Image 1 (tube, rainbow, N blue to C red):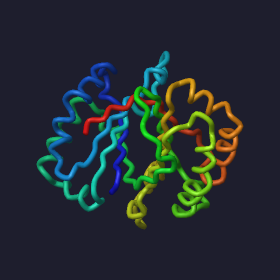
Image 2 (cartoon, rainbow, N blue to C red):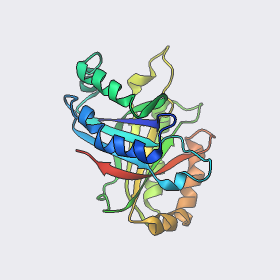
Image 3 (tube, helix red, strand yellow):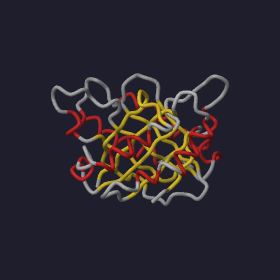
Image 4 (cartoon, rainbow, N blue to C red):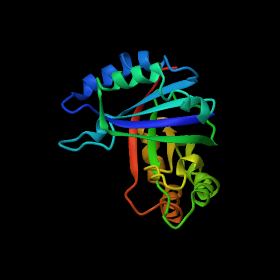
Length: 224
């Protein structure tokens, strides 16, 4: 099974509350028409990212699950996908929309806490590492370091798929994304201030590039 993560900004001039309402109440009507969709989760970026004139990288991250990349690609040219794209024009900025096709790797298989805090962290590898080298370190070294942090709950890595890196094609913006859950904001603070998390941050230089870490606090809505 693969997961497709799509992140985007709202349509220019659209109020944030209107964007959230349309995405949650209206847009699923189009998404659910796509054959083969197994799971659909919306992640609405938390209010804490909107302070003053500050805007986050994305207003939302959609996650959809499919049996395979072939199933996902069968929608190309379909009426259902055409209708979906028409509906996206009602609330999304097409110039600020990007995507990651990934395989999930569950590092810490705890349940999702009710009313908990979810963070999504986007990963880009060091330019001197191959995709396989970076993903292996992230999974086998970085993951175990992270789950040692007190207060950290469920932890899932989404690894970018190799077929998206074919010669002659532009590389995806990110090579993967971490999804991590905490029971609440206090648990996240405990993890962030721990010695164990300090080791996690130090280890980032072993496989991630030197750009600032992009982390979004999100409110998760399970559609199906």
